[in-house]
Structure formats: structure tokens, C-alpha cells
Length: 363
Ligand code: GTP
Picture: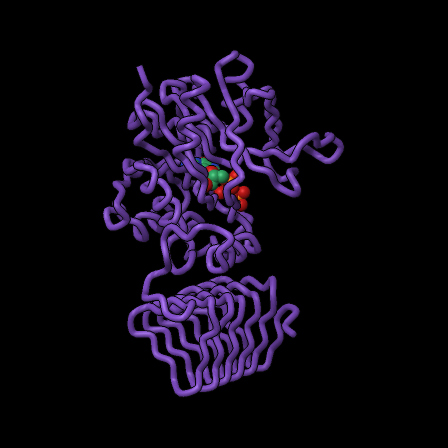
């Protein structure tokens, strides 16, 4: 008898997102703006495309942000339920906390990965191997910050090494991509009510106990958006076509730009594609926005200002003649006239840059 196709997913969305600070001081990582939508909306679009519409969010840190941003996600064509840990239980404990709502084969995803992988192919692989736990594997340049996974020729997982330390030799660049297909019955193996790591405890124990556990190696686009550089570059990857865009930014596409409702551009203001402007953004005379800029709703770009390769959250005010290059600005940031903000600068929501100041390496 063919196994039933998975229809459920649990998304791990309770981490503090320390690498993405200071942005996560103000907003939970799973819902940071990403092409002007909460990040998880893109992951939900992928799940929905593969027929997964029953999604459980395992939350803890700043759960109210997540609820406010996504609600029950009916508008995204899925149904979202929340399970909330009073104390963070880690990646394994978070999934365990959602176990009562799950049955059959389920997807489990880290809430900070962007991929356009063919999840249907992953399911077929899982079924063909009679696997009970299949791990999505991807190749990365520097595997040390990830979990290394060693498999045999058939894909069976032999060894799991989470973030190997300095002297530990790195034998491959194949890492755990943070997406799994699991037989939900296995979740009972995770002790309830205490901190458990899915990577360090749950998977190594499955392997030790001989439970069929396979690695599915995909060449699809994959990125962990959990640090500022990756968060910015992943948005550019979608805008520049390196990843499949499953959910376009809100607004209408025009000449390689996406314009939200009520955008105004004055006189000779220029939009250089690809660029995304949220609702009611105002771009003043002589300003240039793009390429590679994402501007949050109700922001104002002052006369003669330049914004390129930069990510701006909502209601950012950019003063006359200011220059923003490759930076990330939280909500309500105010950039004074003729200030210059360069690549690698990440400003928390509400920050103020005085007039004529230079931050970072602005050219
Ligand atoms: P960093 O602090 O920057 O490493 O980020 P993080 O806190 O999100 O940790 P990490 O990137 O290792 O987490 C991977 C995924 O697991 C993310 O989607 C997190 O939201 C999620 N996660 C991490 N810890 C917990 C937890 O205690 N509970 C739940 N429910 N999810 C968690």
C-alpha cells in the first residue's frame, strides 16, 4: 500500500535570532520583512505549492509578532495553528511540543530557510527508500557553521556532526538544510517538557538505534537567512532571478519594479530595477531608488537621495541628498540630510542618523 502523502508541516519559529540582531530586537526572525512580506509567507507559499496546507508553528520568543504578522494565514491559502512554549525547548523540544497535532508523515522546517526545492521529489525519495526520517541536504562553501551529514551511496545517514569545531577535520560540505520529512510517530522518542536539540540529540539517536534515516541531496536554491548579510542577499537572489520567486512582493509589477498601492514618485525621481516599493512610499524629485532596493511601506525618500542594494523596513525617512548603499534599516529609522550609510550597516528600528554623518564604508 502506498504511504499517505504528507499534508502537514511543523515550522520551528521560536528561536531568538541572535545572529540577526539588532533587527530581531524589534521583530521575531520568522516574520522579518522579506520583499515586504513576513519572511514565513514565502515558506508557506512553497508548502502550499506542494499541497501542504495544515501548518503548525512552534513558537516561543516574540510569538505575538508572529501572530500579528500571519494570523491564521488563510490569505496565503494555508491554515496556521500555533503551539507556544512557555520556556524555549530547543529545536527538538519545539517539535515535540507540537506532536499532539500531528499524524502520518510530516514536514519539519526551520523557520529561517529560503528554498525553492521540489518537496514532491523529497517525498518520492522518502517513500522509495522506506525512510522514516529524511533530511534535506545541501552543499555549502563553508560547512563549519552548519551540521555535517555523512551518508552512504544509497543516501542512508551514517553520521551527524553538528557545527564541527576548529580541529575537527571537515570531510564534506554536505550539510543539514533544516528541513525534514518525519514519521510523526518518532516524535514520541523526544522527551516532553525539556530542552532537546533535533540536530544534536534526536537524529544521532535515530541513527544509533538503526531507524531508517536518509539524506536527500537537492541542488535547488537554499539559503539560511539568519544573519544580516544572508537576509539581504537572499532578497536580491529572488529579485535577480537566482531563486524562484513563489510569492511576489505586494503591489503591481512594472518595468522590473514592484509598486505597492499609493506609491508616489515626484518629477524626475528614478526607479532602477529590480526594486520594490511598499504601499504609500514617496520618492521625491531627483531621488534614485535601485537597483536592488526594497523599501517598506510609508517610507519617504527625500529629494536627491540615493538608495541602492538596501533593505528598508516600514516608515523609514531618508533625508535630502542622503546616500544608502547595501545597508539594512529597521522600522522608523531616520536618516538625516546628506548622511551616508554604507554596506554592512544594520540599524535597529527607531535609530536616528544625524545630518552629514557617515556610517560604514559608504563610497
Ligand atoms: P540564532 O540565535 O541566530 O542562531 O537563531 P535562532 O535562535 O533562530 O537559532 P537557530 O537558527 O539555530 O534555529 C533554527 C530554527 O529553529 C529557527 O527557525 C528557530 O526559530 C528555531 N528555534 C530555535 N530554538 C527554538 C526553540 O527553543 N523553540 C522553537 N519552537 N523553535 C526554535
